[in-house]
Length: 80
Image (cartoon, rainbow, N blue to C red):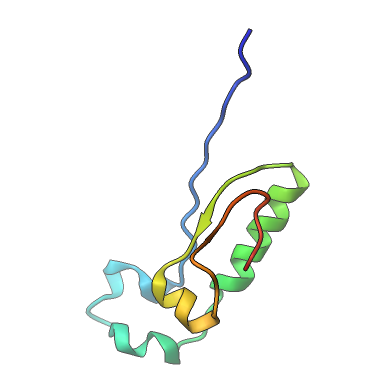
């Protein structure tokens, strides 16, 4: 019997980074807005670690530049 393989995709972004707000929030103003991406990503990583979920994480290039993060990390998940 083969082991069941599950997959999950999570998109963490601030409200102003979605296309629905493109007319209201200019991309050049994103860095002036408060961000919850790093804290929310860390919350997800902690939750995944609690349940031994492995995966690959990536961020928007604008998030990486703003917070000095690496482009991706592989298992175990970590905010780098």
